[in-house]
Image 1 (cartoon, rainbow, N blue to C red):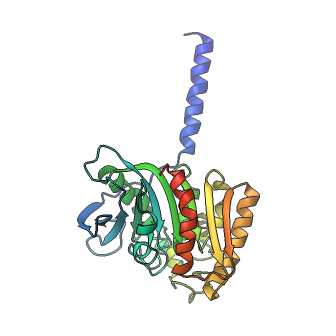
Image 2 (spheres, rainbow, N blue to C red):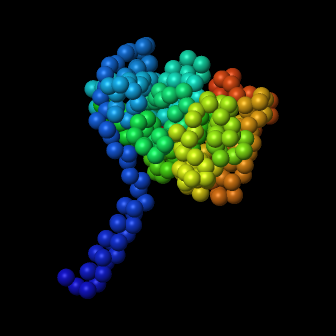
Image 3 (cartoon, one colour):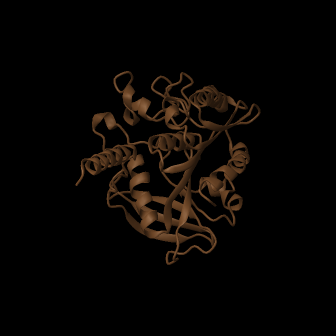
Length: 311
């Protein structure tokens, strides 16, 4: 082998190794089990999934609702892109279909809409649990367990977009920032995009009565001792990781909760724009923290979400 060829192969190996370091590792699947299926309607399929990443006796079951595209079946000879839509605090897998009219908004679209259930205040995170870690591990559950089940059994492929409201907006932007290349676009509606901000919505260590009222010392730890965990789960702190995909961010000032969201979102958008991100900002001052607003903004965001996954 010539010296030139050896040099070329060495350079190629270095480049491939560097590229591998840029690909985020998938959360390990914890042997999730599909316990049951329920065909709610022609378009809606509910799946009951259990996993050791879920808290509770005998692996509690959580539901993933799928809004199915035309022609879908588990035996199809093709797969479909997915749009993950994450619920807010105190909501569940039914919220976007029952309250947000998402089945109607996505009718006829060539994508699977994934509506996973978490908990009343999951924060879409693997909980600190006072240093003990373990369940609930919502990030591992969703992006390890649920993703693996959908892509192995329910004809989902690896082309994805992600969106969410309120707490789900936090999850959408957090996932898109951390798992670069996994999601082709991301949208947040009234999102809790800066939990470290003094507004504290939907809650925080200094404002335990706000929003879903979780024990944030259990979720992400105490401040300042576990500030690194808060920063890792704070979309505002990750804006430089969100510059490669189209983004949609909506917020208003129409009620007390939404005014707290406003305090976080306008600075989040400013930071995104300063970092060079492509962001469609929809600031509607009269908009409240409610489903009337989120339905409108989802309709506005859908063209971006669908086109990004080729649907």
